[in-house]
Amino acid sequence: MQSFNYSEAFNRNIGWVTETELYRLRQKRVAIIGMGGVGGVHLLTLTRLGIGKFHIADLDTFELANFNRQVGAMMSTLDQPKVEVLARMARDINPELDLQCFDRGINAENIDAFLSGVDLFVDGVDFFEPELRSLLFARCYELGIPAITAGPIGMGVPYLIFMPGQMSFEQYFQLQGRPLIQQYVNFLIGLTPKAWHRDYLVDPHRFDLGQKRGPSTPMACQLCSGVVGIEALKILLRRGEVYAAPYYHIFDAYQARYARGRLFWGNGGPLQTIKRQLVYRMVAQQLAKQSSPAAPLPAVINERGVLMQILDLARWAPSGDNTQPWRFEIINDRHFIVHGRDTRDTVVYDLQGRASQLALGGLLETLEIAASHYGYRCEITRRLDLPDITPTFDVQLQSITPQPHPLARFIRARCTQRRAMSRQPLTVQARQVLEHAVGEQYRVIWLEGTPQLRQIARLLFDNAELRLTLFEAYQVHKAVIEWNTQFSADRIPDQALGLDKATLRLMRWALHSWRQVQFLNKYLSGTLLPRLQMDVWPALNCAAHFVIVAKQPLLTVDDFIAGGRAMQRFWLTATQ
Image: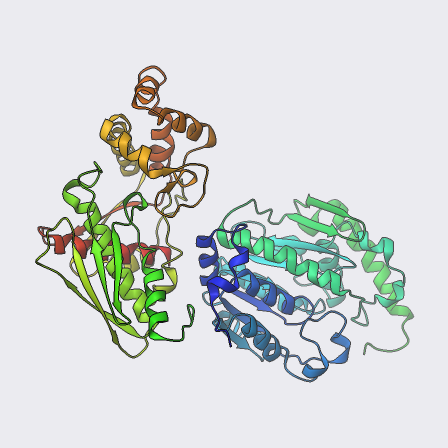
C-alpha cells in the first residue's frame, strides 16, 4: 500500500500557488463551526487545498433529511456524530492533519479554546442559530481573526468577509437586541441584498422562517466551498484583493450573474431599512396564518528512504545567490559526507569564504532539524585535515526517541523576500521568540522607527551603487540570474529580485555586456531604479531591521558555521 506523502498528494495545487505558499498553508489553522451543509464541504475543500490544521465543531448527528446537501450524509453514517464522520473523511485525505474536534458544540465557556491559535474562522452555523453566529463573529473581531460566511441560497452563493479593524458582523447585520424572527430577516437580507434567487423559487411555501425550514441544493453548498476556499487562500497567503464588509458578494450560477456591492451602513442604510420593515411585516402575516407551532511530513518505509527525505529537506537551506556550495556523498544508510566549498575566487560577495561558511552552517542546522522529524539526530564532525576553502563534514545518523523539531515543517516554507512589507511594529512576544531562537551565544540588535529605517535605507542605497557599478559584481549577476522564471534549481529567478517588469527588461538588456551596463549607468541613471526598488523601498517598509551579533569574536571557520546555524534558526522561527 502506498504511503502518504504531503508534497505528492497536493502537488497539483502548485502552479496556482507556489511551493512555498503550499507549505505556508500547511501551517495555517482554520476553525469551522458546523459540519452540515456547508461546513463539511468547507473542511474537505480546505484540506485538499493543503491546509494542515483545523478546529471543527458540531453537536448534531446525520439523518436522512441531510442527504441532499451534506457531504458526510450517507447510509453508512446515519445517526453518527457529524464531527466524527467529517474528521474521518478529512484524515482520509490527509492523515497528518492536526485536527481538534469539539463534539459538544460551541458556547461561551469553550469559545476561546475553539478559536485559540486560529488564523481564519469559517462559518457553517445553521441559518436558524443567529445567537451562536453572533457570539462567534464578535469574539473573532475581538481577537483579530478574519471570518467568512457564505450561504447556499438557491443555486448560488452570497458571501461576506469580516476583517480585523474593518466593519464588524454586528455593525453590518445589526442583530443585537432584536426578536429572533427579525434576526433571521436581518441576516438573510444582509447576506443577499439582491435576492436573485426569488426569480426561480418554484414553491415559495417551502421557505418558512417561522417553521425554521427552507429549500437547499447541493450545488449551492459546493459553490460556497469554492468561494470560501478562494477567499481563504487570499487571506491566509496575504495576496490578492480582499473585499471585506461593507462589501457583499453574490454569485448566482443559475442566472449566470455576479455582483459586488457595498452597504456603507450595513442593514442600517435607508434602502435596507425599508426592505427589513417590509419583510418583518410579511413574516408576521405568515406566522399569523399558521395553525400549528413550529416543529507527519511524509512517512517513509526504510532507512535509505529516511536518509533521502532528510537530504531532500536539507537542500532547502539558504545560500548566497542560491549557489548551494555543498554536495552530498552517501556512504551508507546512516552515514553521508557534506562536501563544502566556498566561492571566494569567483564571487566578490564571498569575502574570505565567510558567506559560504554561513550557508554551510545553515545547511547543518537544517539537517539536524530535518533528522529529528524521522527520529534521528545528526552527529557532525568536520574533517580538520582539509583546507578551509573546502569544509567537509561527516554526518552520522543516530536513532533517538522521535521528537520532531517545531521548526521542521517550516524548512520548505522559508524563502527570501525582497519586496516591501508591513510597517506594523513587532510585538514583544515576537521579539522574545526570535531572540531566543539564536541561542545564548548571540544577541539580536533591533533597528526600528522612522529615523533608523531611513538610516538603513541610505546605507543600502549607497551600498547598492557599489553593487551595481563594480565589474566583479556584474560578472556575478550575469551568471546567477535565471530569466523569465519564478523558480530556479541553482540560480536566482528574475521574478524573485523584487523589480517591476520594465526594470527587469532593462536590467536583462544591460547585463548582456559590461559596456551596456556602463552606458546605462553613465547616461540613463541605470542604478537608480534598482536601488529604489530593491533597497530603499523595502528598507523603509518593514517592521524592523535586525543584526545578529556574536558575544565572542568569530575567528575560525567553525565560528562562522555556528553563526550560520544561528541565522537559520532565526530565519525559520521568523517563518513560523
